[in-house]
Length: 427
DNA sequence: ACTGATGATTTGCA
DNA sequence: TGCAAATCATCAGT
Image 1 (tube, chains in turn yellow, blue, brown):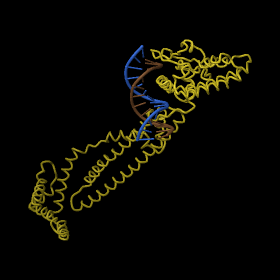
Image 2 (image 1 turned 60 degrees about the vertical axis):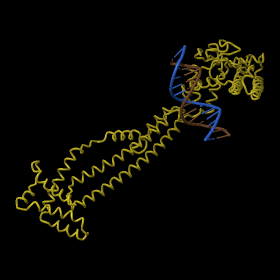
Image 3 (image 1 turned 180 degrees about the horizontal axis):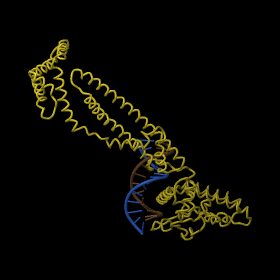
Image 4 (image 1 turned 90 degrees about the vertical axis):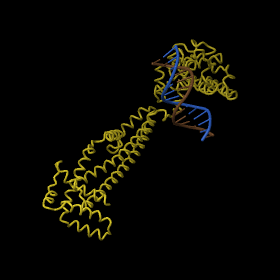
């Protein structure tokens, strides 16, 4: 306690000594020049410090006495000057406070993502971009779109409610501190500038909380976006119809399952997927078929039936239109995606050694296919039915090429032959 | 939770 | 550049 008194006494002296720095202490000097000993100030300070040791009533009485003391204004003025000087020196170091670039960046980002911008629709552009980049069918896109928007709205809501809480807490705390300072300003010198500075400090402290909030919101948006933009994460199986179309093409071009660019485009259109998805599908299919032909044999036979039935019905229609016609006239007439004939039809045709009246073709093919289907189920493997004429066994040659064991590839997939829309035979 | 299927990506090759 | 092969990540059935 005595130390403090000495310090304060010294401080009061400092006020007078600081004269060379241009600090105006006229009032003190006047008091001193008027014969008031400096000791008086020391006494007052001593009394102030002693207040804390006394009971409340006593302190109140002392306080009143001090407030009425004739030296009080002088002391107050000295303290104000000292404080002003200290504050100025602190301000000189700390006060430079340009808008935080980090906050600005976060604000811009939140605005761009539609989190902090005008209500609703702000995030639609980002959502659309995400949905578009994710690819997939239009339906899926819209589902993703709404899903994305819903999640973004959720983030937005959390952000705004947290921001509101933050602002409320900030203003509450500021008010509290301001009231406290105002209250204290009655007993100690606190200038409005000092209050202002204190408010600034509080806001800076709170802005770090605000930055954290903005940062985590940005992170949440980024995670959300990456989830929607990363195609792998949002992988959806193609619908049944699309898979059927692709399989039909694959198995009807088994000797050379490499669709040309045009064929890919047409398949993509038919399946409502992208060309690259078609490429991916064929890439995967080829490799997986090659790895485990037996596993796919049943599937192959199923599609054989399907394509054969289709081909037969097409040829039936054709033969009805032009009476003396062979069954393959219909299928070979068109060798695009709709034909499904490929080398399969030739196989089926050769199987029976003769042409059928068109009305019988379908049922015969179906019967044979059923038998084969059963056989496949019983044997469950490619090896056992390798001799099955429904699908001539394929082998992968040393180059990894697709080759027909029974027929050279030049025969099964001639350029421009039935159902052959080949782009690359080098594989 | 486990597992096989499947669409997408990566890497290396010709 | 297109492909094979390996791998990843998710889906979907159990």
